[in-house]
Length: 261
Image (tube, rainbow, N blue to C red):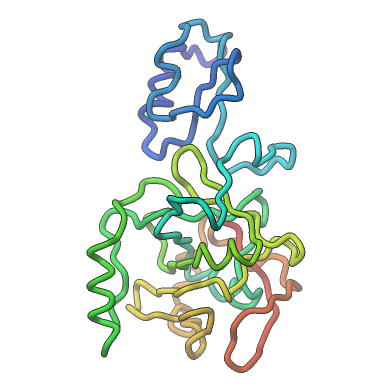
């Protein structure tokens, strides 16, 4: 930090004003306390040597233990997030389907937002689903700033309670991001059977419903968008092509690669 000539007040300001609340400052004297990232170290010393700084989520080091950093979610948690959504790209989605679900890949966890970004809305479908979708809009949680890229074309809505009851571990970070390492017995897979619905925002279609892939899962419609949507972590879906999953293809097809979040 000295080489960057950054002052401690500047670091505190960055932590408190970061748009996604990615960091926390923790007093060394109380490293077991759960920090409030919006008010970092308000009542503590201005001595920088008295603090540690950490990322709230997004870790790739295996030595970072979830238990010491995150709040566990269980089926009995009284305030489970009402919405749990993973955003991804057109480039990554076919590989996610082929793998039978999501995997953390290079990170410790799959990241899920506890709501939708500003300006996002659930896809409304023809027929009876239109009314249901409109009703759902009235009870959506406030827009989120962490857990999903605004550029996400594909939205994966996860049935959090169903996955928890099946034994898949989930956590909540200090800045409100839902995290899971997936089912360890299945290589860290969060299976398609836990996908409540998957939407292609550009096409305005639901491509997975209640764990079952609709048609080709929107793969053909996204084919021309693959190169444009492949940047960043969300576009690494083509790696590890030998992964196998128990995904919900109607015709029983399985296999393929999974995606980093």
